[in-house]
Image (cartoon, rainbow, N blue to C red; front, side):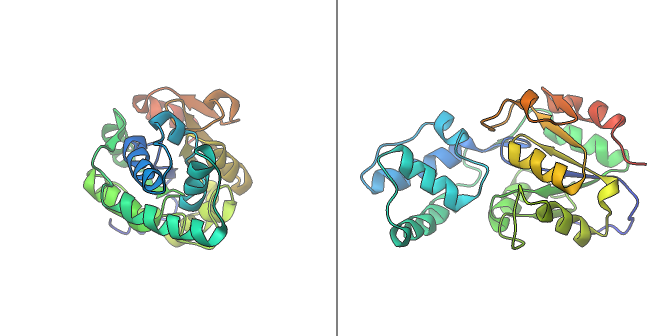
Length: 229
């Protein structure tokens, strides 16, 4: 990922899971392997879609809660570490970009947008996925859920990433699929676009985003009148 020096170019901060990539199959497989190893049942992709968005520890806790109860904190922490290892062994086994993602981001780069990923997924896994799915040449910067002391919905997750890029919040827009994405954008003073194909428990049209799109082909048009000047 290259570093760019312009500071007044508009910036699009993108969530990853449920926004640019459909990672539910790999997330569900890793969580199911963890749970069955602990004597629990497997979980479906639809169940996992409702669990993601708040980081690894919360995902694992929700998985145990849905299958018989949450173990004590020390045992849960061990399970979190095991889950990370399981998931990192299959990051892109079945994970795919949503249709139109690569083309949409390419169009925006050609229009002068700077592109970054701001996700609650761990940074190392996020970088590996971005590279494996051929996004590395488009994405300039990335912040995971463990990059800074805070993560979405805290506005500091977005603001610290923009600061690291040398960009002002007044030149940025957030793209996401969940309440955490939109809440972080609102708290940071950024306009927000929601995708309707995501994993968020709250329907996209109820998130309070400035625009809602059903396909990433519509992203450039949605950004046209939100583009910071």
